[in-house]
Length: 276
Length: 325
Image (cartoon, rainbow over all chains, first blue to last red; front, side, top):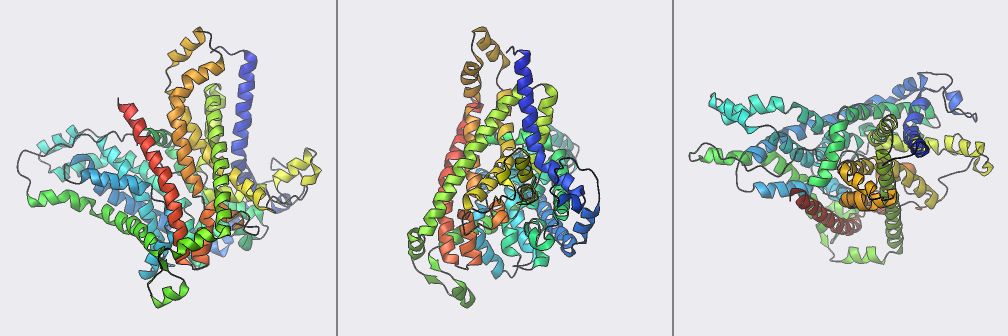
């Protein structure tokens, strides 16, 4: 594959242009969040911010809703992630290490559950939560996010447990640990990176979720951040700086976590597409 | 579409290793129930919160369930009445046609862009490639609603940077141009937004397949005097084709169900012009309180998705077989 110098320059130029296109919305969100409002609502052409201010972040944080919605989002997301991890580890151990009847059937159930069309199930869910008296309460969302994130948590953790050599547990059992003692003392500590990666995926899924938050939460002070952000026009009016600052604050945890496990995610997504 | 974490199945899930038997002694009743006790929380959660609603939605689709029945707690079976009403409604057909067209356009653009970018990435020099990968990861990681808000700012009628840029380039008619005045134009903006979020996944998937193609094959092709196009068609394409097919199916499954972006931008407006099937479901069900009719729409949607998903799973299993042999 010998390319001439000209071809190489042309290809790299296209690459740079595409990179700029893809970076632009994120760049624009961040720079707009730092621009003073008179620069935002002007007809001047300003791709690069000339003056920087933190006013927008102050105005976003001062919105009566922001901290409430942030807390709501954190409660349902972290709660769902914690439930998923506990149920996931409990299920991953027998799936990876024990022989029992119905194992294959359960794996099939997990695979099918992973493809469940949540977008078409909100009516029965709505009625279910109403019967349970949970409508308009944070636990209803927590439960749904738990259910949405559980299948892939189980599947992923089972893979991570299988990746840990069984000989380590055997050695611990020879040394007098019970089977569960061996799991707790040998496997769980080695499972750390797998737990981190899995919980990040679960976190991002729940952090992003919009439809169920919109359907379940009728009172505005029960809404999560994404639903609140979608109504920004009634909250902020034309205060685009405040909207962008709120968006940056909302995006930050997801961006940080995502970059943390980015390598695993890319290879994981492709491995999932290939190997099931 | 939530390309972020919905599909993520981390690496390291090889076919189940043969589970090892415990020590050679008879397992007691206690020991035999342990696997089931450990699985119980996961099984119960999935059955109650995913299985039961699945059964329920089918049941409700055969009932009349409006606000009155709901309040009185009545169960009124009306057979196929809801389906008849839905299928006879011209508005439903308009929305179905719009959703299919929208999905097709978005998927085609996403897969094509992802494929082109993956091929391009192979030919970039190190620095530019890393820069492109970082920006793609950024686009992938930014939460859906944050991106949706930024797009509304970029496309803002008066102060949006897009209109300002177009005017600067000499297209004066774009001064104060409203991108959300018609359904088609609104859906175009929503489509761009979805494509921007979805391309990274498709691109990285195909790129991984390209990296897996043995370098010797390209060398052999170039020694035989193959043109770049011939090298792509005969060396790259056979090895990435299954991945492109899988990415296409996954994209169809995702984009057909998109709700958040469409709702957040204009709630299906103007005048219902950007209402897609998931929005219709929400408007009939939650906003209109016609739970029976909405459930019938949901069941029809699930049927379409079922066909697509079955084909996807079939392809998935087949590609795994090829992988193992």
